[in-house]
Length: 583
Ligand SMILES: Nc1ncnc2c1ncn2[C@@H]1O[C@H](COP(=O)(O)OP(=O)(O)OP(=O)(O)O)[C@@H](O)[C@H]1O
Ligand SMILES: [Mg+2]
Image (cartoon, rainbow, N blue to C red; front, side):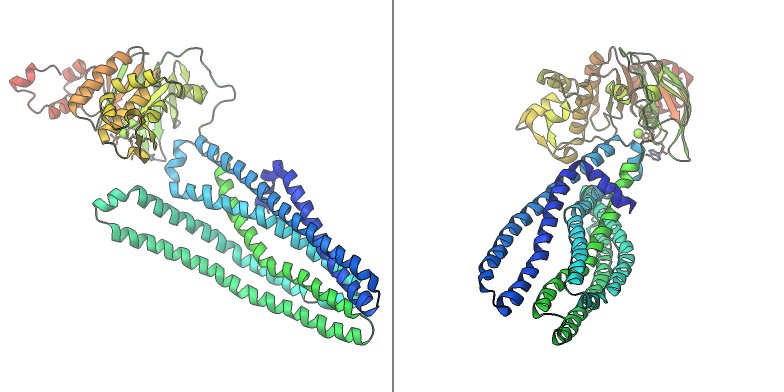
């Protein structure tokens, strides 16, 4: 019930449309409830009573009623639809912007397919309820009450007899609801699983093919699809049982009217016109009851879907801004980690990280895979919160910063390149919507991307596929570098961003980057010594701890882990050729 209330709350702003639609609906019912009475007058007074001159006006009234009714039905459908579409539009927008506000950690836990299914199927379930559910519910409720009242007024005895069956119908509907609710929850969840399976498979289709695991994937999908089918069949079974029972009970009503009504006519306690009218009204009584199951169905679906949608909307962001966040006048780009500990769940990932990156300096972070490098830089833009200790930018704890302002000054080139299905220009401009064409080209030149872009058939207007399909790994990385550069941030973070380009290109990029690195704090995560050796400070991480720090020369002199790594990369460290190199 709470869920339905919340759905209504959401649609509040559009209640004008809903009220108009309801007005049409009531008018429609009013007309439907009066026309059988006119038929009764025609039978009793005109045909049997001989009042012939009444016939034409009565027929004209029936004709006019039919005309008005069709206009009203049109308006009613239109306005219920508008009402539901407006509500859906807002709900979907709200859900989307809410999803934008949720932190990385939310996406660590939730799968894309699952969220997609909530954004589409579940929202549609709610809309169905608003467009069709409410109108049917109201319509039938009013019919039920209106018809009952009319029947009782028309012929009290016959009315009571006809309605004797209704409590059974109500009980049946109640039972049906109990059975069908959990089935729907099941169906929605299974739908999400199916969605996830399809989405993951399509995204990962290249891996599937490379490992020739199509059969396995097909089987996996078939299994989930089968479950989906079964669950829908369970729901249909419940339906299938429900309808014949409803019909049976309805036909009992009909038998009662004819049998009991006939005897009342014989005894002079009812007219033939009464029976004609009753017959018409009976359908108005039976229809709502028959539809009760269907309405329960729609409501149950909306409740389940509503629950799943509101669950997302109710997820608060664990990364919240303070009430009066810090908005700086100007940025310097100094980053300080002070005894920072961090873990994703239980397992500690970063331990007592403590360093100062003065504004404009270059900090390199090295360490084995899984040592916590990406986790560390994710704390600067406050994509995760520390467990203890502080991360400070320009002397202010990142928790006190306005998130937008903080992140506006950080340019990240992520380890996994993600590009949008857009033009190359659009992808670079994503970093800074205000960037001019010249700035975009300049950024691409620094990232050593300009030349290959110009070689493409449409140059900067070349549309690249989802996630940058159609480009090589190194090309994608270079566009991502351009995207970060065009942002012109005070803090530039490069997470292994030249891993896919050759040494030569990497060298070119770094040379060009030097010109833009002045005046900004740069974090470089890299595995190649050549990428880090010019850094002011190299932090060497091991299992989440800084085990060595210093510049290249001092670390070489320490003869510790860094030195070992350099040796590994330049195997012939002691060879005469090596000694001649400047590393
Ligand atoms: N989103 C996450 N949720 C839970 N654990 C995570 C998450 N991301 C990383 N980890 C774990 O945290 C540890 C550090 O991961 P991190 O990505 O920071 O390593 P890294 O040094 O960047 O490695 P690489 O060089 O391979 O990129 C790993 O043990 C990893 O399993
Ligand atoms: Mg990493």
